[in-house]
Length: 190
Image (cartoon, rainbow, N blue to C red; front, side):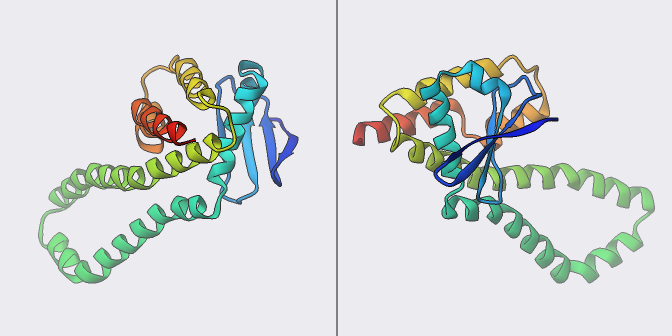
């Protein structure tokens, strides 16, 4: 995958990935870099492209950077607490029951862990996205961000049904109607 640096936006590097066909942009956790796919520059007009970059720059604010790391830290602390608190009871229980039952318990518990992690991540990702939208709203004209979001959502809807699509559309990002409601609310305050 070929990367090239495009421009600097408020001291942040914008890097363009030339291979992917999807319209996408994201901010890295280093606090300095925004990565966009090459397709987004040709798909959006310059004002829309700038509103997307400003949204991604909103992810690079210190508060949003903290929100990005919190789900991992909370999950790690819950796992450590669980292991330290119930370590002896769990080990003795799993040693007493037959191996097939132990295996079934562990397999049955795995989806619960995934669901808990998804809910925990959504609790932090949705406010993070809305804060990034507000960051972009403050610096763009009225109605631009909402029309750009609709355009990008509609384009990326061609991707067939997959776990990645569900994760991206419903966990990492709030549903479109929730984002548009917040955008409309904050645009009216502008």
